[in-house]
Image 1 (cartoon, rainbow, N blue to C red):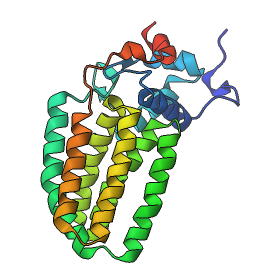
Image 2: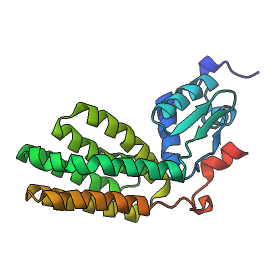
Image 3: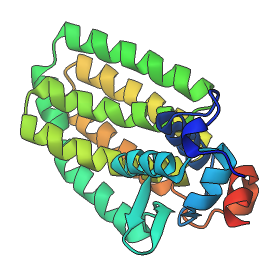
Length: 233
């Protein structure tokens, strides 16, 4: 007779831990965009109730890593190429103006904070967590908006950066991520020197480089498939 769900073993993972596992699998491209996340399969895999799995999936949905479609289930988010192009086009319009404001308003303490952030970026790039890496690379741009002090811009950019981070996590190589951090450093150097137009050019070139590095036709067969094999069984 099956044990009651309330008697899950003490070692069973929490909903947050399960969400972190799945997020890591998405970041590592073990779960390709569009993969259906079957509750019953995840419940068997983690030896937990489907209620706990639903809580984990809700967390992933809030982070925009998955889409929950009524009457169909949960799927790994699958940003389209058109969506990506539109997001980066919008960011170029906003961030050209942001770069000018940043050069005018940034103070030594702000540069010190961003220098510390760059170190965190480099540490993440050296590690294996591409989700954290993508988030930090995106946060650099949000921090610029916070320094400028326009809360409406901060909120808009947070949404755009969150969507961009998912896209780069899914479709960008590790080497391109290194280039992104280098370009952040170049931008800061120009801004510190008060070279406004060069700073604007560098931020636009950076966004161009990130977009051009996206690979929407990358074969998922290049990835490890241990978790996805369970879900597709």
